[in-house]
Length: 202
Length: 403
Image (cartoon, rainbow over all chains, first blue to last red; front, side, top):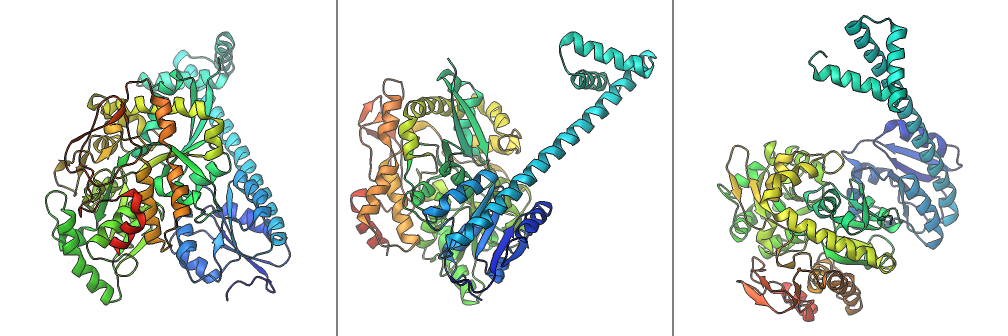
C-alpha cells in the first residue's frame, strides 16, 4: 500500500479538482503517460480519507481549491502516508513547480520520488490546465457575445415598440448613436435597456 | 510620473481592510502607488503567489511568515514583516449544545471559567473515544496558537484530550452545523455567519486570551523588501492613514460597504460593520454586545512589528510542532519582524514610534506611558488571561515553565 521510491508500481496520481469538467480534461492528458494511474477527487467532504485510500505519489490540486490548507495540514501531521509529501522535493523540481503555479495548479510530491518522473507529468498537467483556461476564456467570450446580441435585440424592440420603427431603422438609430458618441453598439443598447428599466417600463 | 505598482495577495477577511482602504480612499495613490489586490481562498495559495512572484506582498497569518522562514512545509525562504495589519479580531464559537453544556449564557464567557467547565466534558468525550473536535483556520495561524494556549492553560491538552483540525473560514459555519467540529476559532465575519445561521454561539473573543495578540501581517520575501524598499515604506504610510480612517466611527458604514463589495469580501456589510465597531451578536435572537478592542487596527502603534511578538509565535511553534528550541532558528525568527523598516517609513510623520523594538509580552496590567522615539504613547493592558508573561530574552525558560 505505501508509496515506494523505486516505483516498481505505476505512479499513483491524485487529481483534486472541484470542477469535474477540468478534471476530465487533465485526466485524459495524464492517461497518455506510461505507467500512471489517475484518481480524480471532486468531493470536498471526506477529502483526506479519500487521499489516504489512494496513497498517491503525487497530488495535483488547483490553486483556487479552498481545501488546500486542509490538505497541507494533513501532510504535516499524517503518519498514514509512507513518506511526507512536500510542495516540491529538490531544486531541480523548482522550475516545474513554478510553471505549475503559473498555470494555476499546485503539485505535492512524495519525498524521494525521482525528479525524472515528476517533470513529464507536471508538463502535461500544466499544458492541460492552460488549455482548459483558454477554453474557458473562449467560452466566456462567446457567452459575452451572446449576451450582447440579446441586449441589442431588446434595445431594438424597445425602439420598435416605443417609436413605431421598423427593425432595420431601429438598428440604424442605435448604430448612428454609437458612431456619434464613439461608443460600442452594445454599450448604446445597454444604455437604452437600462433607461427603459429605470423609467419603469421594463 | 507613473504610479509604481504593488501587487498584494489577500484572503476575504475583515482584517484585510488596510491595504483595501489604502487603495479605495486614494492614500496609496497619494504616495505614488497603484495597488493591485489579488483575492484567493486559501493561505497556501496566497503564500504560493508570494513565493513564486505573482504578488509582491501578502496579507498573511503571522505564524505562517515565520514557518516559511524556517522551512516548515515548504523549502525555507526568508520572509519579512515590516507592518502588522492588526491585533486580534478572532473569536471562539461553540455549537449551541456545547455552549449550553459549559453554561455560557448572556455575554461573552470568562476564559478561565469556560475552560474549567469545558475540561470535564472534554475528558469524558476523550475517554469515550469521541474527543471534542475544534476547528482552526490554519496550522500556522494565530487562531490555532490562541486556541491551544487557552485550552492548555485550562488543563485540556490539544491533540491528546481534544482534536484540532483545519477548517477553511468559509466552511466554518457548515462544519459546526454538520457536527464535523464542536467549536471553531476563526476571524470575522465567519463567527457572525455561524451565529446568524443558528449554527453556533460566540463563546470567547481571542482578545480575552491575549489582550494584544498579533494577528495578520504584511509579508514580503526578504529580497523583494530590499528591492522595493522605497515603495514598501510608502505603502506603510498609506496603510497607517487607512488605519486612522478605519477606526474612526464616522467612517464605519462607508468602510463596511467597501469591504463588502464582490471584489473584496463579497459579504454582508451589516456583519462587517459590526466587527469594525467591536460589536458582536453572540447568539441568534440575542442582544448585540460591545467588546472594546475586539479588533485592534491602529491605536497604540498596533501596526508596529514588535520583535517579541514574532518570538512569542516561535515559542508556540516549538511547543505545538514539538520541535526542540533552537537559538539559531530563534535568531532567524527575530529578523522576520522589521521594526527598522516601520520606523524609517514613519519617522517625521505624526505617528508615534516606540523607543524599544521588543517588550515583555503580557507584562502590562494597566495604562502605562512608554518611552518613544517620536510622539507620545500609552499602552494599555496586554495581559494573557492566565497572567503569564513572555520574556523574549528567555524563550527556553518560558517553554520549560509551560511544560
